[in-house]
Image 1 (tube, rainbow, N blue to C red):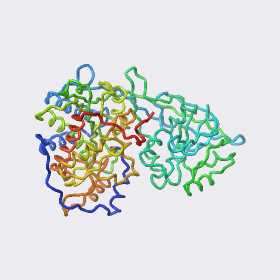
Image 2 (cartoon, rainbow, N blue to C red):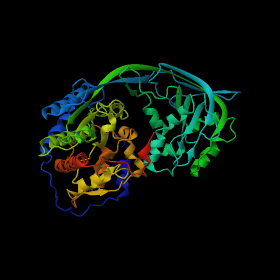
Image 3 (cartoon, helix red, strand yellow):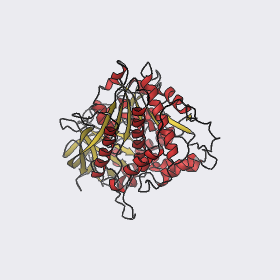
Image 4 (cartoon, one colour):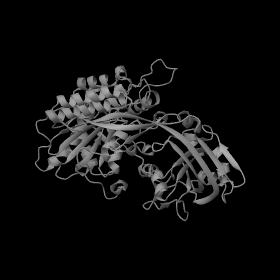
Length: 545
């Protein structure tokens, strides 16, 4: 899962998550159940040192994909990849910024100011072109957001065609978290649709408190990854955006040298949670960079269990779990360099495989067909899921729902679950019914500021109109000797995206059984329902572009 590492520490500091009373014994009519030993076997293999962290395009991830495909085959599931196989092979372009090639110059008309790369401005490589250079006037556009529903138009009364837009990092505080996160991810789209040729993002004092500029600079040289379409074109939707830069507010004064409103006034507005209006800055900038490209490949792994109903079998319930992780650490201060990714996301893939077995061995086949999809490159930006959403191996309009399995933290006997997305569609009813069969409560999102509904592999399908739900273990434990919120927070503070996320953690596989059974019941309920799930009328995600 792509998640802010500060969350774990925040949870630890709140002390809000107390232990629950002992839950009632599970009551359910399921004729199959997950098996703890099988979950353990899957997880220990996928998170073993031999797979070296399962980085996208690595040998270790290829082994993981073969393991998943072999399990699908042994269950008798139908291949749902390319050319009658279980594998949807994806080509990716890995792009790196050539050392010393990035420059950023501000021209006020009377003076020129060159900012220092790595200290005053940052930029990444282009996935589209090897060489980029753009010179254009700059227009300030506030947060750079447009939303009729929320009454936002940061491009009102300014012309940005052929110009560079400068926008603030983040979003207005009054925006709901999930909706705001979606709008925030659409900033480049809004700029490109209005003819901009470059985007400058201003690192603000508020952002400095969350993630200091120098921390972002530490990761500046990491390559970016983009999927390539079957015809070899990179997934760069806005090719007219030629230049981009991220500028520290402490170095941004030259950009406001000719402006009617000073940088200090803009920052003062932000401090009062006011939204600055757009205006011409009266300066131009020149941005240059050279990018180096290499091609890698990595597979999604997909299988289908055909449904039993003559009509409904042509509709699909989609389970997803990402099989990749972040590979080897370059931190030489550590003895262990392998990021095993036991919870992230060997646990989710293990649940996926056990869920598949349960459907195969159940006394009755579900009415709708079930797709089991292990996706690659989640850690690179949800790329494997996004590729499948663009190039599905079944008609996209026939996928009725997505149940995503990403990083269940199976370290305690949980008494509740959180279902991201449950408030946006009728899937919430399916989740509550399934969890209730095992005496598990459905709790509200305890950290809405994280906007997790937009941060895992279900999100590309949401953007394509597919209702989705994503479960994680809640913060309440069944026993008085465990504090679920504290354990969950400690995992993120001490193990998330670190070599210590490995099978030696005190993993509670019996809790994994309950988690798997609930996810099975969710899919079973969806697959057998007379009507397909639907978005709620008042959901922001019901009608995305």
